Amino acid sequence: MADIAIIKEYAKILRKYMHAFSLEPIDIAYLAKSTRKTIVSILAHSGSLELETQESISQIFNLHYYEFGNPDHPLPAFDALPQKNKRSHRL
Image 1 (cartoon, rainbow, N blue to C red):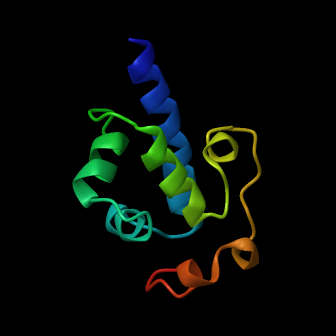
Image 2 (image 1 turned 90 degrees about the vertical axis):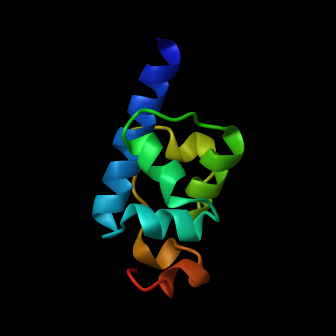
């Protein structure tokens, strides 16, 4: 039960970042070197969440997993994102 609550909270934060930067699950998957299926399962609260995946997603926004997972952490400015992510077709 606790694992689902953690995934729900993480998915909520991920959605906030996706909305702020106009990203889709496929964009997150590409930038985090993951799969769309993994990202969609996190968003649907049906998958698992490994630390490596958390860190990869966090790095899209030039953050560490513990910063990204903190709901009170401010969204980074677009200029603070890694250069390679700014060149993404959506960013």
